[in-house]
Length: 68
Image (cartoon, rainbow, N blue to C red; front, side, top):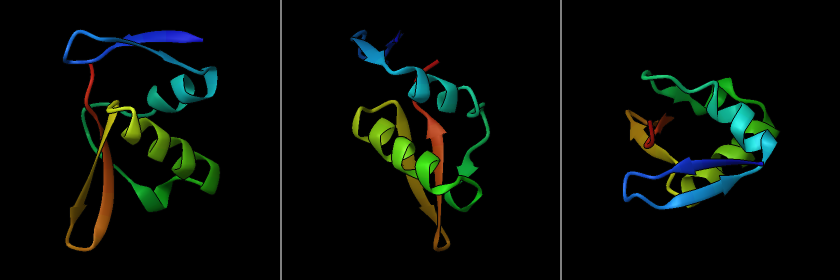
């Protein structure tokens, strides 16, 4: 279990699995199709927690970090 700080200064616990996936995200967005089914589900959970931002660019879905 790890703790991350959101941009609103709120501390949020993440599971080890969520933390490992979050490490894959750098400054560049990651395309949803490059993630396997499990990673897509975890990315969706992280989007719901406001850790990732999901964007739609020309019909392709991308995830990018919202936290540092």
